[in-house]
Length: 259
Image (tube, rainbow, N blue to C red):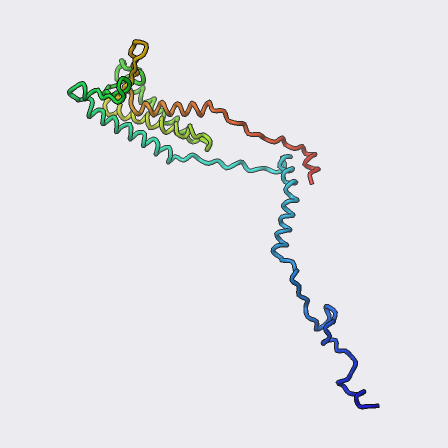
């Protein structure tokens, strides 16, 4: 028997730790690696999407059946800054033009200076004192009647405008502009009554057709703002709004059968 048969280096027994074909999980074997291993984040997102898609029909059915409440839609509150800015600008323009009219037209010495034509035979500027209201309302009444009446009307108008402005919705654009215009105009005429016991009017509109002269009562910027504001309020009132379509509620039996 040769020495090579008994040599340790020539042993025919395989070393399990050095074999490249060792079974997985065997002691000493390396953990397998793969580029196709699932991403844990993507797996979690997929599970969440699947759960949401599965639960949405059940939630909708429960809402229709009345078992689950739905929060009312969020309503935007009206911006009082807009109300104040538009009213103040209207008031400033009105009082400024009245001061100009009183200073340049009231004490003018000649008729040409007292009567300034803006559009020939149509619009002119002429100073006038209006102790009453629109179209000479209460013009002939005593001051003890006119003053409390017009003060009360102005106060009620302010209260009405502010209270109505609180209930505006984002879709009511016409009313959103109309209310501050009316407010600014009403305050402009009220300031004149406190200052002079009359309102300064200076815009004179007239025309001739059919062989006759037609004359519109003299007015001011405050009256223009009030008329435009009331017109916008009327537009908002008569503008048709599409009714909201509400889906009929599902019965309890249909909600129970929902997946």
